[in-house]
Image (cartoon, rainbow, N blue to C red; front, side):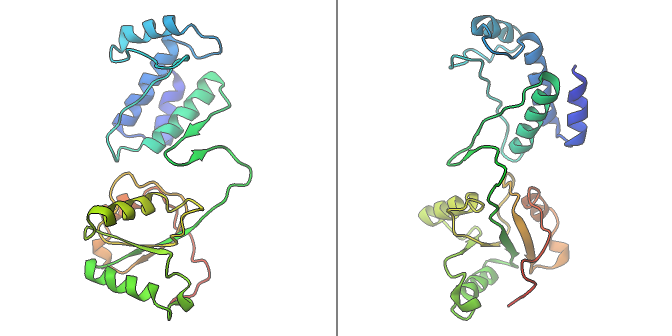
Length: 227
C-alpha cells in the first residue's frame, strides 16, 4: 500500500468506508497507472480482474464511481482522493462537478456566510420565523432571507425547503438565516457557517446538532449586535 494512504487517512480522520475507498483507489492506480494516452481497454481489463463490478468506463478515458451511503462523508473523501493523486502521482489539476454548481479553483472565491438558529421545537421555530420576517426585525431586511427547516414541511414545501437548504452557500440563493429543528441530518456539508445561535438547552445540543454542523466553521458574529 502506498505510504500516502496511511498519512492521508490519519490526517483527515477517515471513517472505515472512506479509508477503504482510498485503498481501492490506491490499488487501481497501481495496476492501471493514471496518465495521458492510457490504453483504456488494458486498464479496464486490469481493474476488472480485481474489481469485477467495474464493467465499463462509459467514457473515452478511465472513469470510476464510488458509491457511499449518505452521511459517510463524500466531500471529505473527494478531498482525500485529490490529496492522494497529487502526492502519490504528481497530479496538479482537478475539475470537480457538483449538482447545480460547477466548482473551479479560484484566487478570489466569493464567500456567502449564513447564520444557524437552533430552535427548541417546531412551535418555537415558527415564532422565530415570524419574528425574523417582521418589519420590526432590522427593518425587514431578512424578510425573504430566512428558511425554517423541520419535519412540519411536506410535499412541495418540503422540496423547496430542501432545495434552499442545499444551496444556502450559493451566491444566487438569498437565504442568510436558517432556523433549524432536529434537521438537517447527515450529509449537510457547509463551510460558510459563521454564527450559531443555540436556543435549546445546552444538553440538547449533542448528537444530531454536532453531526449537522460538522462541515461548518462557526467563528464570529458579523457585527456583534442582536435583536
